[in-house]
Image (cartoon, rainbow, N blue to C red):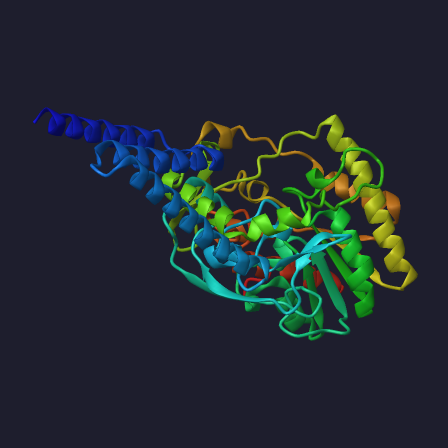
Length: 438
């Protein structure tokens, strides 16, 4: 009777310890691994304590089960080593770098690029801010991503294009249908071929490489360089010198680790153990927007830009040299060079009558003079460089109740793409920039 009470007491203590361990949460992958190994060994210890089997029998079972587990895991990992399975794609997990993600490959100059003829279908459920805040999923919107032989978001392979648009995720826009992209609409309005050479995460260093390697090969008449103020400046080294855009390449074994079963199982398990943890900073950056029908939408903001600092002035000098090289390269080929300034969501909505800031941070959030700084740089480089600030047409549209930015994301909606595309079309067509409301 005493032995049974001791066994039950041992079991209760063990289960209580498991509950306490679970309630403490998982703070890191290493923490999760420690918990899993400790839990496995504790289970065997509890089994050895409560079992009536001889100790040698228990030891044999422990060794046999552990070896079987290692062999099963090793066989599964071997499928990844020989290239039959990519567990990162299978589990839908992300890598630490862009080139570790599904649909991307390494590039010696660019650091990473999209796979040639890559295709992905899915549904847009929640924006990047929505993910950070663990907001409820939106109504699913289907997207179909198609990439050409060079790895850019064009439905067909293009050997020539009259207009080329270079940029980052604002140009690529992987969360939107292809028909809504500014490049698609620009092609329809201009009735000519327009190539989309935007890749998410690229900065001015990489975009200069794109211009030289890919844009010139298309023999365009016009190159439109879309500069996004949210991160393009801050991706530059603050020193006025040529810097490598290629991250430190890891060894082949580290490449495999990103695709391995062990790593991706741990990531999935950690996410399940942690759940979604809201990023509290984003909660302080929100406001209420009223559309043309009187419907109110809660807008969340991501990029909080302050006054330009001394290091930012150095980055502007680096930007000057990059744009100068881009312009000179285009000019030598007789190509028209245009720079379009893509503003952050806050710059577009601040001060509008139909937008109400909901926090002190939003009400006291100052704007810097980056658009004027970029315009001044281009004017000093060459008067013939055309500059288009997309802030006025986007503000005009927003003031009319047009939702130009995704509520829980930092990027444009399809309407935002339309407004930007129309503004660029008006400039390229040679007429004054205005907002199309048709």
